[in-house]
Length: 236
Image 1 (cartoon, rainbow, N blue to C red):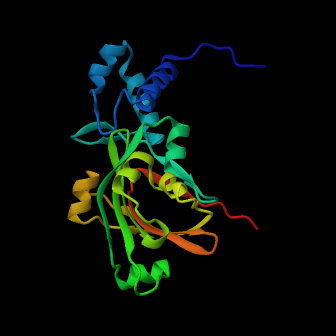
Image 2: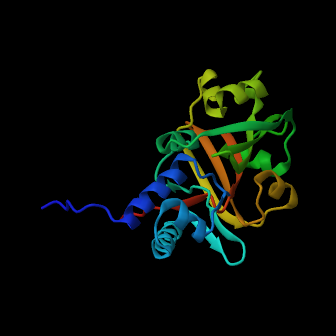
Image 3: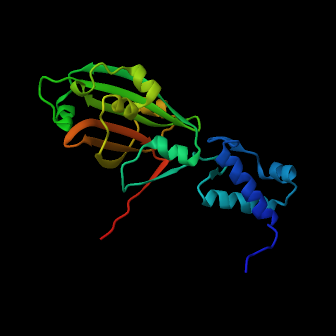
């Protein structure tokens, strides 16, 4: 038998505030009004307001700090590490507005470590692209990508800015078929803190991408620790 009881004020308030957060009406980092103001605005008791805020906090949607107030959290994106993925697809599934900007673009001789990671010959140059990614108007990732120049002759920053990196790969008839990632927590340096608007710890994701047996990209992404969570599925 279905439950046909009417929703309680607590349930109604939770759904209302949940939608405000998920729709972006209450933006990441925004301070929520004090409990007394919320009671008056929504004509509910202080207990109802407090229980609703507690549930939102349990769900990771808000954070409450003694003496500072209650703030909307960045919406986390769970990434399941079971197959190739693109963040663009994930954001579109969740209806999260997103975009990226190219901070720098250069072509030149790589250092020894990058050359080894790309398994390149000594006389080859690489394309280096540094981008910053935003979701909900909040920067969440700094990404530095290296590609062998001979695979992408004539590639420009404008192509990447307009089409994205992997769509640009497609114009060269190259697609990512598999990738290997390693993850580790790191502290942010001063420059990264300024670009990512946070001083919290972050995750460094090193990714090597393949087209057939050939390495076509090595990328290091610095991801805000409060924005993503990763789930690994292990099966026998």
